[in-house]
Length: 114
Image (tube, rainbow, N blue to C red):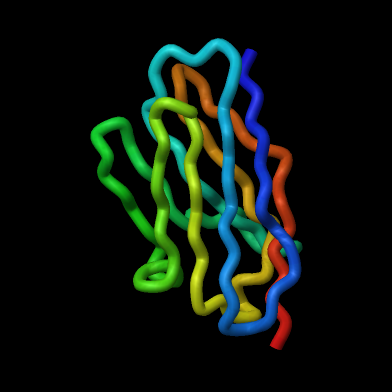
């Protein structure tokens, strides 16, 4: 079994910053990818940023230049630093980990007020 523990969501004013963390634990031998998706109610789940086992990071266009994804391999943890937040960044953010199977966190709410 694999468990994902997310933290760092909350309410912030436009222009502010937040850092999300996601720690994976359990039967982990090799992480193929780790990152964050987000979903606004009524909309599809969308990729925010993801890092693969080789360290390559892909960002959504909406995240480029504002968000930074980083990873601590020793802790099986991924961080998403979000700067210059906008109201349209308001969503539930889900941690994603790809081992042999895909695992999702429970979601953390990020609300950006204007």
